[in-house]
Image 1: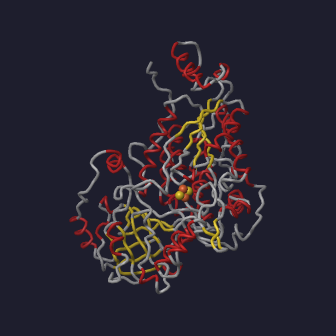
Image 2: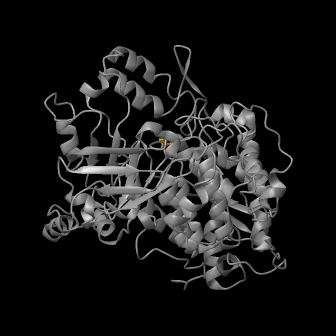
Image 3: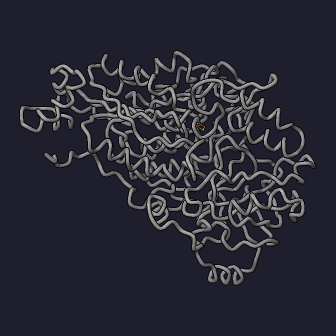
Length: 580
Ligand code: FES
């Protein structure tokens, strides 16, 4: 990819606020001087917005204010002018009804935060699941030079000598309690071992996946994704990123130069190699929509199908992000893909170098954590996209987290109309269900929940767990936490709340899942399915005002990234009218 840097010096957009001697520029400059900035800082140097998702209620990003100080140091060193700006922060573990419902709201707010203010470049300080895509979507829609700095994962958890993976062990311990294999007191004791330091989930969950996607897309410096939050090298990375964004502004190196179709294809393959979260599918589709790249679910299947999962991390494997970093981190994985002919080597990165130039000399220090391609965790990783009369627009499944014997399965549907119906019935010993059944959950998609909650990996009934069974086929229009596992078909599109075929599945219907042939079939006659769909009516209980209403009216399907229809595309960063 050839990139020609813009000439420097030249007038930057921030000079529309701060350059010259007019009444308005004196007004803007004068007010900012109340922070004690000397006059010569307004001489036309790049002003860099450090967009910070720090929040006490986003604990995964709780250390980002300290980290921002290192970013600022780097910006000052490179001759820029840093301004730290707090932005909408959606915590995965706190926000109700679902952090996902607020990804688009955050992206909208942050897009306008960038466009409406004097920034020439942006450092995206992110970490917890939704913060990474929301800021990247905003930056893409503004197309202003931007670099991602993630907060990094937490240190390994340990309980009674064994690794404890964020989320992954929450689900495991919870199922063990239900099966009578663990006491409630032991569960409480384990709680203290789960989060040992600042940082994001220590598994290859959605946060680590999205950090990896940012790096694989070329939007973060090489090596950024895996450095633990509390490792001193995380702070070095922040400072180096601060230095780099100043040069990116001078060169006018923008997201649209980096986030190309080739870059997305690279990232999809990286997702397969790391056993990344299914959530990456909706986020990457939405990000591609913001830069005008035609990325589809079929691209996910096409690019990921032949990629072996080589990163041995929970939830698919055994280790955690700390070990991934010590093994060499994402650059080793990208190098392996390059050597296997599965990488667009000349894709540009924020460093100004190609992705191959960034990784060609790295070394793998632990071949049990990052496996050789000949000895993978799963020969065909990636995200499988299944289609059929139950999911005409597609549904996704993560083979590396599924049970091999369930990837081809025919079973009787046990239907839950929504998550409350599931909760009311699942522990009922009289529920007519066994391990051969297919659990079907409706009305948890982008419109339905609303906000596409992470409930697709619904827990198994206790009477099945007590038999020692730990997996069943589950199908829904929901998402699943990136830390979760199982033979779980997600993002079924169109969703039930939009009148998709999922809405008309009934108890006792037979369902066929055939992942090798990418098929998901509701085994009822076509005229019966048509009659049920014709009789379907939307649920009456809709939000009638506020953001939930806006979201429900405008959110698109999971198969296109669940963005809002009116937010798709790049709206640029032209400076608007002054109001004074
Ligand atoms: Fe925030 Fe996992 S809950 S990173």
